[in-house]
Image 1 (cartoon, rainbow, N blue to C red):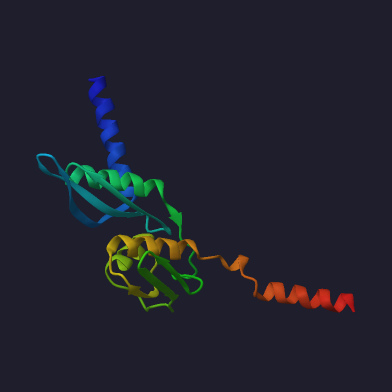
Image 2 (image 1 turned 45 degrees about the horizontal axis):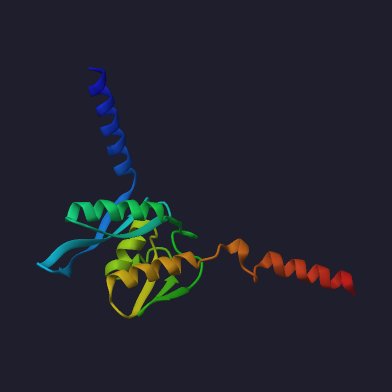
Length: 181
């Protein structure tokens, strides 16, 4: 009886953990390795995991079957979480990133605009919890490169407190300039 309670509690913890994150599979590929007797097939999965509260991660992994590849990729994504800086459900400033052949441009949008993005970019930003944004993908349409470019662009965001040209910094400079005269 006690053993079944432990098993049930472990299952309930796993269910709670799964519901905590929004996990979406972006791509599944069959990859082949040529060996002496022919080809050995494996599967590669690209997965995005987010909590819809400005945390998101991307993971890519291979496995002997699809479910193994997806579960490995989810674990990799959970280990690579980044914090997305937002202001009023959008990003604080324009940003861009280039990974391999994929170039991504992300621009902030006003309330009510929605996610103006396609494919992989839309999925990643939706899972991250960004509600209003404009985006453009240039160059390669490779889903892996595009997804890593989106993550690099989101990493490059800086919060308003770190901006050089804020009103607080300008007023401080004016007061110090008057004092030095």
